[in-house]
Length: 271
Length: 329
Image (cartoon, rainbow over all chains, first blue to last red; front, side):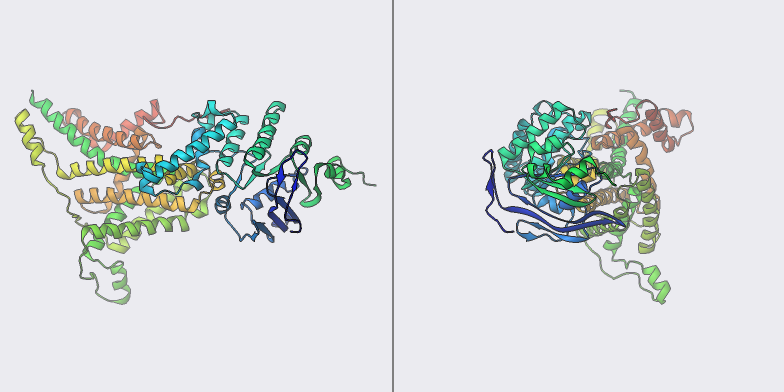
């Protein structure tokens, strides 16, 4: 970690020092190498994208960060400390929230209840107090509800607060999932293809939400996305992966002009 | 008031009481089903095991004494002490929590993401294992359980009803206690599931494992907790049934009576388990009284519940209170 201080972006957002660093990560499934010796860092307050063609290992990378996969080699550094091997729920409790490519919501619960589960980390009152709605538990519940309502307003899903999630269309489910992740007030928010399967209008909405979240709450965001246009507009820095290897890393402009990246996306003539 | 009607009222009340006991067992089923999607066939055997353990601890029985005596040629049976009821209940609860941990550690941890039918089969295996294990541990003889709950006719009700109808109702004190305990238990469980963090986490785990992990819920903790809760409900049911009819291995058969209760009430509803239990209890007693005994030669209580459940399955498969299955196509 050389330059600790950080920098200021063109649109005036302050980007802080390194909050997370992946060092020489290698992940294998049997003989298949999903991630090969990849290193990159994430700075506080930035939107960091991971892009690459299908099967490049992007989701695997996100799963390593969120503890769903444990890499065979390499180290994850979080807030200046080397992270020991952790279960996904332990990672979540450290303040790393995520969404899933295929949406993982509690289908039987209402939108409000779903978003409330995001705040489990912020509920500390005793069991009896919670059950009887007394003292600390009451204060906590009120606080948590306020925070959750704010996020629900923010993502414009007030009208479906009491609807069971199972009844919602795809685009709204994606937004509820984002709301739940946000409710945890995460230090890092991981988004696995937040715009996959959306139409242009929904994509624009989602892009706006991602930018607003970053702007309003100062949340550090790591996102995976296929749509090059979206990624280039949204992100401060981009990691490019191909066949499990890192082939590019830098600002959207740098990446766009990187020959290896162009080859990976457009194909290269073999002669 | 005609005599027949007064008798029917007494039968009705006794039916309610019997229904409470059915509901107690059904409650254990619903709890695990809601929280983990597992239909726990071994719930009845867990009640038996809890009751056996409670008696064993109270009487100061040496666990596995038959096995130890057979292997080493010793003659030990009792430690020679008696444990007071309350302490014994607490100790039994510790055993049930340990059992919950073991069940998760040795069975269900290895079956994550398996089909519900496979999990169900595993609980059948667990039921047989527990029955045998309880046998080896505490012996197969019928045991008397007395934790100090009052038994016999409730004189106050007898007197009041005699003054009103000129006929005293026979209501067992134990049944009244069972009702009170069941009501408390249900209130506690509903409060727990709806308003506590652990309850919310429990419902979350039942819905989606991955999502639960991603918000910071430990699956292992929740599963052990759920099985401990089921163990606790089993203990309560075991105490009530054991006090009523002695701790014997046929106790595990009452679990089967819980099935029609669940079909009526719905597998996912705690109030459903209660209402279902009451309907079955009252239904079978009244049917026996009004139709069974006079016209069908009696003993209709054995099959009435199942026939009622069958009729329900035809007309309302999700039960009275069960969640309607909503699926977007």
